Length: 293
Image 1 (tube, rainbow, N blue to C red):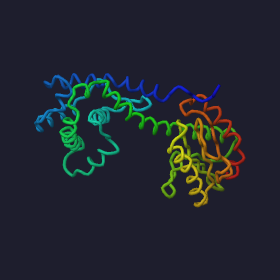
Image 2: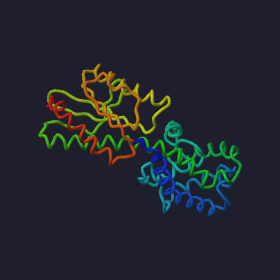
Image 3: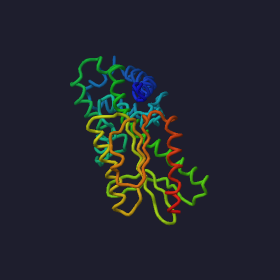
Image 4: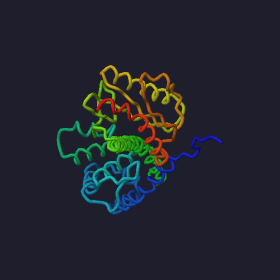
């Protein structure tokens, strides 16, 4: 029997979060009904710009009882909940695409700039989706699922960075090593190193790479990214110990141009299973870490 995880754990987690966001959607529906609209389609189809501006001002200025949750079920504050929700509703990307547009506007508060942008997006999007079912919960849930997947991926990466830092700190303490684990990423030639270990006689940089899926072109990019991280660190005179957490990675471990690496062949969703394996792998490298103290 294969040890690979057949069940899509990522999907299960994401759907749980999406369902936690349903009360915010339902509260929004009640909000548009209070303003005289039969449903969300009628609201987004409002043609009078001044009227829409007034309603959006009311939307952003009054707190909802509910909030939105990010990809790992942490609550967004009210401001971010409002902004993210209405841009997701309009099938857009609040951070990647819209925030640069908002920032480029010269006049008005952040809220006023957001309202100006939303008004124009709404006028463009509403005619593209004229069916009321396209604005009901099941359609919006699919949009949330996609948006939260990106959020979850980034946050999960941050989770493992924090775990590596925490385990290293405990390792150095138990072995009485005079080493510092910094709380910041290191940037070298556009490469990011998630964990930095500093000693009197040098530094060790540790990129933390995680991957859930096994094949496809992105797997090749994942492998190339690991090789590049090692290469750039060496070019700048630093030791590099990559931490790779991937259920099935086809990269050639022996081909890595570094003396040490950590590879844990486990699905990144299985955090409880990963923790003891990571601890054991780090323990094996005590002598390497001690060399820079």
